[in-house]
Image (tube, rainbow, N blue to C red; front, top):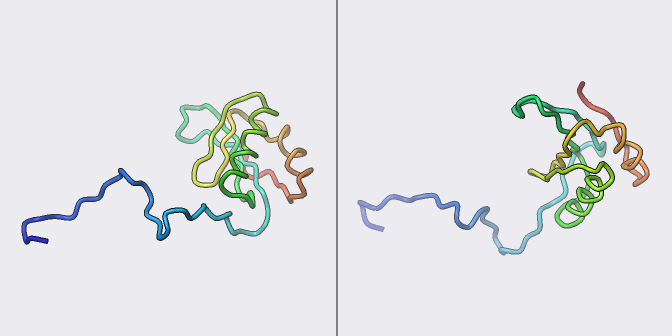
Length: 108
């Protein structure tokens, strides 16, 4: 490199991985799936956040799709956290417990 060149970060390739094919890992935690209602930063619109799910990649996407279909609403996955539109905690809690996970309501 010449003295006048500067290293520039590029968002074109996303996260850099060693082998380029590594799948995202399931979160390691205390083994409890938590359902939390949050409105912060959403202009008062509430969402249900589902954290601690011991799945990753396509399995997590499939679970999110199943939960959205059950609730009849939209949602997304951000950094391993499933976001479901509206306060759906009471509806989703028994469904997640049937999958064999310990589920708790967290927050308000």
